Length: 171
Image 1 (cartoon, helix red, strand yellow):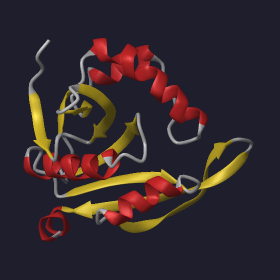
Image 2 (cartoon, rainbow, N blue to C red; image 1 turned 135 degrees about the vertical axis):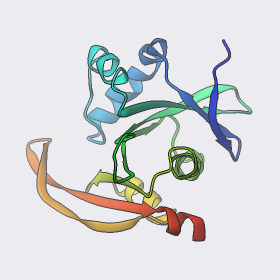
Image 3 (cartoon, rainbow, N blue to C red; image 1 turned 90 degrees about the vertical axis):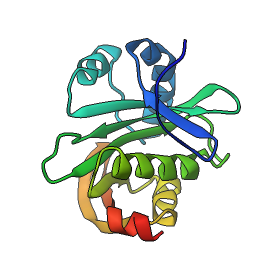
Image 4 (cartoon, one colour; image 1 turned 45 degrees about the vertical axis):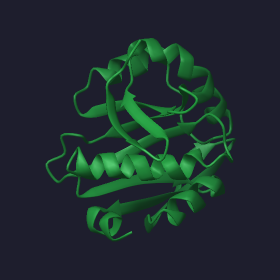
């Protein structure tokens, strides 16, 4: 089945997620949840969120391998302040350069196609790999939500980072 490409760059492409993709991506979400990186949602919850015009579910594919390598959820698509949240990013195979390339692709898509002014995200303090990735592609620290997330029988900090369109354009 051929899907409409939203954006492509550096051998990756993104497309709008179909409900049929949920069964394929859900095991990876469970795995990421067990590591405390994302909150696992049920397939039913995802299906309901996919109907929300303010939320965009995106599949990330390796163009050369013609396979899904991850997914992301963007929220605030209709935000009048043009501030879009990168709510979730799950890459199935780590340490292969997909994260960095995906961040470049998503940023290009959000700023050029969705006309965002600001792209922001939060990352849990124990997810050092993701934090360093975001910093390495130009995201700036905005602050820490101290002990705002309860995981693994302890409260942990959440870091908030963002990238502005002008910063992306300069990078």
